[in-house]
Length: 102
Image (cartoon, rainbow, N blue to C red; front, side, top):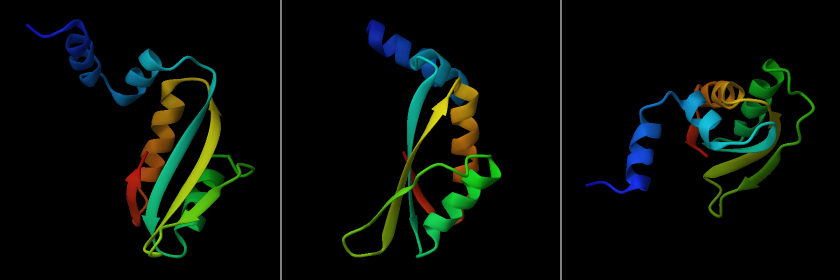
């Protein structure tokens, strides 16, 4: 028989992503996104996504990988619901050079 934790995990895994965030996060909150991608212009592509979503004033923190093959771009947004987080993840997932999204 699955534990209570396993049952809750299974229940949450069946929910759409935005609803999972609504269940797990207390809003409003500052939510940190980290996108890791390839190419010297990856950070600029993240900036373009933010600008298109109306977050042009957000500060990006960039960090190249040790070998220089990747760059991580971290930023925080004040969000008021799971839909806002889901929309940003969806927009970032559309980046061609994206390798990982945390």
